Image 1 (cartoon, helix red, strand yellow):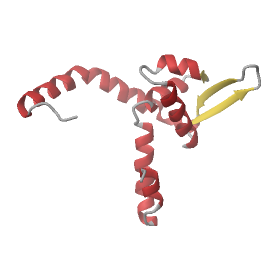
Image 2: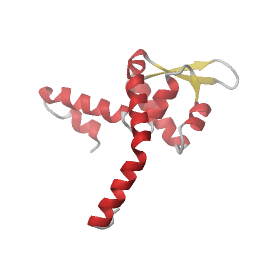
Image 3: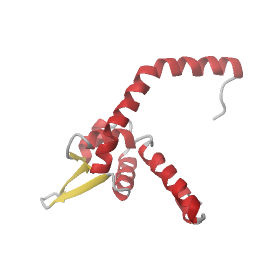
Image 4: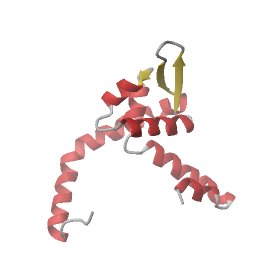
Length: 131
């Protein structure tokens, strides 16, 4: 059962916590941060996102865009041209997140080497991780 389905079946007093967890999972997802940062700069097309979000597949980009749109974090605008031009823009709710996402990204960049060194030391001490 997916996490979303589990959230539907819980008691009302637990629903708020579930919604918060789902929201944090969405905005903190592997691909969401890069997409939201890019879309916060102004309208951006699918192909531009594909180039900017390093390592993302077309399928994963499509799924992530749909989920972010469903959660109210992205607005999808289809322009009636041939072929149709589709642009994504961060909503005001996503714009509010922008500074936090940039700060989180900068923190990760600053500490990337330290985290790698800590992992290597841990693995030497405890053996290589499984999986």
